[in-house]
Length: 209
Image 1 (cartoon, rainbow, N blue to C red):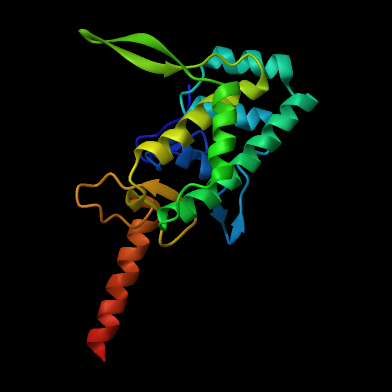
Image 2 (image 1 turned 180 degrees about the horizontal axis):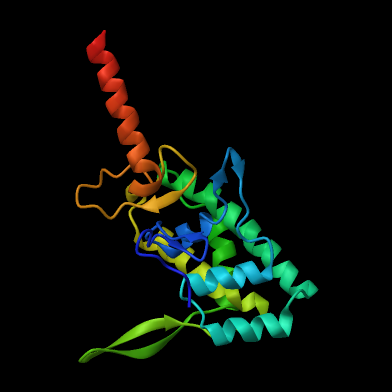
C-alpha cells in the first residue's frame, strides 16, 4: 500500500500528487530540488512504485511485472520512452495553456499509443450503486503506456486550458479546481505559504517607505 500521511496527503511514497489530473501528476515526476532537476523515475522499479502510488496497479501486479521484467533491456526502454513522453507532454502543456492548439505530432503520438495500449472498463460496486471505471491489465512493460495516453488525451480533449497552470514559484503543473479559478501555486504546503509570506513582506516594505 502506498505511504500517504495525514500531514501531507499530496505526497505518496515519495511522489507528488497535487496536479488534480493523472497526466499532470506524471509530468510532475521531475521536480526541482535545491535548484536542480530531480528524476523520480530513474528505473523500472521506481516507475512501478509511481503506478502503485497513483493507484493504477495493485501490489500483486507490480510484483509480477518487477519479477518478470526487472532490469531487462525491455523494461529500461520502457522507462526511457516514458520519460521522453513526459517531457514532450510538459512542452505541449506549457504551450497549450498559453493558447496554442495541441500539435499534430502530439495528437498522432497519443492516438498511436491509445491504439496500441487501450484502456478498458469494468463495473465496480460503490455502495448501493455500480459504476464503470477505467481499467487495464499490464502484461508487458509497454502496456504501462495505457493510462498515461488515456489521461493525456482526456486532458487535451476535455479540460479547459485556462484551468491548467504551472506554479508561479516552481516547475510543478496543476489543474485549478477552485471555485474562483484563482489558484496560482501548486500547493499551499509547498509554495502557497511562501508566496503569501513574500507578498506580506512586500506590503510591509511598501508601507514603511
